Length: 74
Image (cartoon, rainbow, N blue to C red; front, side):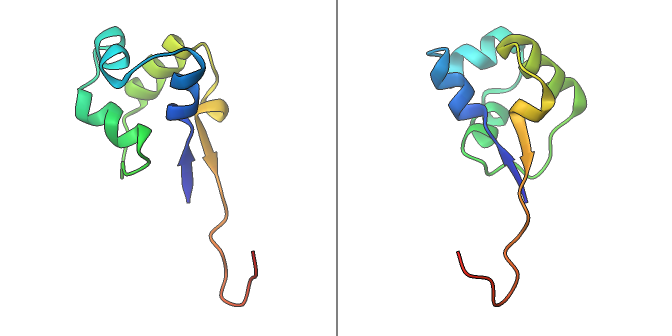
């Protein structure tokens, strides 16, 4: 699974979804889906705009988290 840390990065800079949408030119629904971790896809230009605005790397914004395997605890 890919985890998106947009909401955390936004909170650190006291940005709202509407602020991020306005400053990046991204659709508000796209920003909302990423912040809520419900997005199923994202375009590379969108990642670039978010990273530029938040002054972060792709690895700061997105993280691959292994899915739990049957029998795993935790």
